[in-house]
Length: 465
Image 1 (cartoon, rainbow, N blue to C red):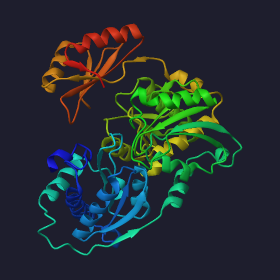
Image 2: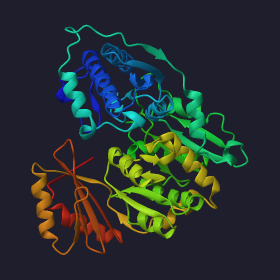
Image 3: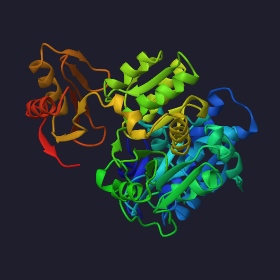
């Protein structure tokens, strides 16, 4: 069963089969063993380094899975600090706020309601993925049977950290919005997820934000639309509401509120790479010369605009493990991914949907003109969007691609990137599926369409996503 629930970056599967309470206990025990061991190996002897934060989302199965997870943590002899029903970035904050050895959020993020899982973080909220501890946790979990061991006597306590979390997030909000001297109309689609709890608790009393709520009911564990803002169809409600109420912008969150997508006042979707380029301008005006990270699938407009504003562009591999590590190593102040994750140095280099909302609203409040006008300079190229291809031999397909485009500037930092001057593309293999993912950019739609058709013949069968 464990092999079916452990993925590249987290634990995630359908509940109750294959993911159930017994597996949650085993995983909790293994998490306690791994996180406290990591702290001890790093030389930490503070008593708090035997404490583990546990949060959960609004899914119907989350309370039962969280309870079993905590029992497993306590069974090993570690101590669980239950912070309740919270968004995933809350857990990252709580780990650092309480100076614990790590934490777990019970969530399946953007997956359908019958899924659940665990996102695990270690000291300083560093993410635990397959290459950074998840394989060890899986091995530990496979070796423990709750029916055959004598559980230790770890403790459990409840902590309400919402006030501290609210204060932390609102540090990123412009004072003109905090005191109401600048007003913005914002439509927020919570996707029946944890933004439905987070937004009222954090931003509910902010005088400068007039928030129109969409899909804030998160008490049933069901979703009006799939809680994945990367799917264009899932943005339909927020786009319609922005036009209906004449809002300044709209934001749609995913299920656990660590990712978001933005639409402008005309209800046009703003790509997260273009949003990164625009936010970088605002950040660099206030922090000249800073380093800004971006994922390598991003438009060339991103590094161009960062450099033009006096910043240092930092190209990064895709994924939160790599983004956080890269930002920390280069002391980057901000980073953005196409997937809707935004990272902040002053948030322990972690991503946060709540802070993204604060930073986006603040940048718009300081700007001269509507969001569509702010983003326009970044729309200098045409992008294909991510296109998926099914192939059983991903390595062979990538090798053929390199052989065909012998005149390209090639790098293999993450997948294969081919730069032919007028156009470029990146092809990355999926970690979990027999898929290759293509992102291509060129000067105009005609070029992009032609080159997508050309490159596609080497990548396998195109699949709808």
